[in-house]
Length: 123
Image (tube, rainbow, N blue to C red):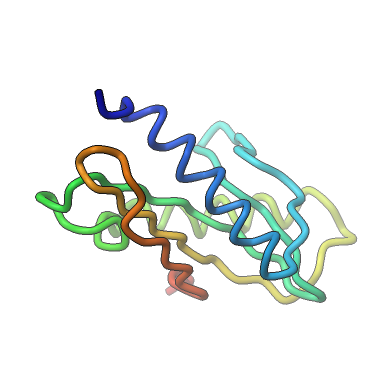
Protein backbone atom coordinates (compact mmCIF):
# COMPACT_ATOMS: atom_id res chain seq x y z
CA UNK A 1 0.00 0.00 0.00
CA UNK A 2 1.43 3.43 -0.93
CA UNK A 3 2.20 5.85 1.91
CA UNK A 4 -0.46 8.36 2.97
CA UNK A 5 -0.26 11.97 1.84
CA UNK A 6 0.93 13.00 5.32
CA UNK A 7 3.61 10.26 5.40
CA UNK A 8 4.79 11.28 1.93
CA UNK A 9 5.05 14.93 3.04
CA UNK A 10 7.03 13.93 6.12
CA UNK A 11 9.34 11.80 3.97
CA UNK A 12 9.80 14.67 1.53
CA UNK A 13 10.80 17.01 4.36
CA UNK A 14 13.28 14.47 5.75
CA UNK A 15 14.82 14.04 2.29
CA UNK A 16 15.03 17.83 1.92
CA UNK A 17 16.85 18.15 5.27
CA UNK A 18 19.29 15.39 4.26
CA UNK A 19 19.92 17.20 0.96
CA UNK A 20 20.56 20.52 2.71
CA UNK A 21 22.90 18.98 5.29
CA UNK A 22 24.86 17.27 2.50
CA UNK A 23 25.27 20.70 0.83
CA UNK A 24 26.65 22.21 4.04
CA UNK A 25 23.57 24.00 5.35
CA UNK A 26 22.89 24.27 9.09
CA UNK A 27 19.24 23.72 9.96
CA UNK A 28 17.93 26.44 12.31
CA UNK A 29 14.25 25.51 12.37
CA UNK A 30 11.81 22.96 11.03
CA UNK A 31 8.10 23.64 10.71
CA UNK A 32 8.37 27.10 12.27
CA UNK A 33 4.81 28.31 12.83
CA UNK A 34 3.31 31.77 12.77
CA UNK A 35 -0.38 32.60 12.97
CA UNK A 36 -0.29 33.26 9.20
CA UNK A 37 1.36 29.97 8.28
CA UNK A 38 4.46 27.82 8.52
CA UNK A 39 7.98 27.86 7.16
CA UNK A 40 9.02 24.27 6.41
CA UNK A 41 12.77 24.76 6.92
CA UNK A 42 14.95 27.69 7.94
CA UNK A 43 18.63 27.03 7.24
CA UNK A 44 21.95 28.87 7.09
CA UNK A 45 24.77 28.48 4.61
CA UNK A 46 27.63 30.79 5.54
CA UNK A 47 26.23 34.31 5.59
CA UNK A 48 22.96 33.28 3.88
CA UNK A 49 19.64 32.63 5.61
CA UNK A 50 17.41 30.40 3.48
CA UNK A 51 13.68 29.88 3.94
CA UNK A 52 12.77 26.61 2.29
CA UNK A 53 9.35 25.47 1.14
CA UNK A 54 9.16 21.72 0.54
CA UNK A 55 6.66 20.68 -2.13
CA UNK A 56 5.82 17.00 -2.67
CA UNK A 57 3.79 15.37 -5.42
CA UNK A 58 2.93 11.79 -6.22
CA UNK A 59 2.31 10.49 -9.71
CA UNK A 60 2.48 13.66 -11.78
CA UNK A 61 -1.14 13.64 -12.98
CA UNK A 62 -1.65 17.04 -11.32
CA UNK A 63 1.75 18.37 -12.41
CA UNK A 64 5.12 18.24 -10.73
CA UNK A 65 5.92 19.35 -7.20
CA UNK A 66 7.72 22.45 -8.47
CA UNK A 67 4.60 23.47 -10.44
CA UNK A 68 2.37 23.26 -7.36
CA UNK A 69 3.41 26.57 -5.76
CA UNK A 70 0.54 29.01 -6.29
CA UNK A 71 0.93 32.81 -6.43
CA UNK A 72 -0.97 33.06 -3.12
CA UNK A 73 1.45 30.64 -1.46
CA UNK A 74 4.40 32.59 -2.89
CA UNK A 75 3.05 35.82 -1.35
CA UNK A 76 2.49 34.06 1.97
CA UNK A 77 6.07 32.74 1.96
CA UNK A 78 7.44 36.25 1.41
CA UNK A 79 5.40 37.52 4.37
CA UNK A 80 6.49 34.63 6.59
CA UNK A 81 10.16 35.17 5.69
CA UNK A 82 9.83 38.86 6.53
CA UNK A 83 8.15 38.03 9.85
CA UNK A 84 10.85 35.50 10.73
CA UNK A 85 13.51 38.09 9.92
CA UNK A 86 12.09 40.29 12.68
CA UNK A 87 12.41 37.59 15.37
CA UNK A 88 16.18 37.93 15.89
CA UNK A 89 18.54 40.86 15.30
CA UNK A 90 21.50 38.50 14.82
CA UNK A 91 20.24 36.81 11.65
CA UNK A 92 22.25 36.95 8.42
CA UNK A 93 21.32 39.89 6.19
CA UNK A 94 21.49 37.86 2.96
CA UNK A 95 18.21 36.00 2.62
CA UNK A 96 16.58 33.82 0.02
CA UNK A 97 13.42 31.78 -0.38
CA UNK A 98 14.03 28.38 -1.97
CA UNK A 99 11.79 25.52 -2.98
CA UNK A 100 12.75 21.88 -2.71
CA UNK A 101 10.47 19.92 -5.03
CA UNK A 102 10.19 16.20 -4.30
CA UNK A 103 8.38 14.01 -6.82
CA UNK A 104 7.33 10.44 -6.06
CA UNK A 105 5.96 7.58 -8.14
CA UNK A 106 2.37 6.55 -7.30
CA UNK A 107 3.86 3.75 -5.18
CA UNK A 108 5.75 6.28 -3.07
CA UNK A 109 9.19 5.60 -4.56
CA UNK A 110 11.33 8.72 -4.99
CA UNK A 111 11.52 10.01 -8.57
CA UNK A 112 13.38 13.28 -8.12
CA UNK A 113 14.44 15.97 -5.68
CA UNK A 114 15.15 19.44 -7.08
CA UNK A 115 16.49 22.37 -5.03
CA UNK A 116 15.40 25.61 -6.68
CA UNK A 117 17.42 28.41 -5.12
CA UNK A 118 15.76 31.83 -5.08
CA UNK A 119 12.50 30.38 -6.41
CA UNK A 120 10.39 33.01 -4.64
CA UNK A 121 11.06 36.72 -4.32
CA UNK A 122 9.23 39.82 -3.14
CA UNK A 123 7.56 41.89 -5.85
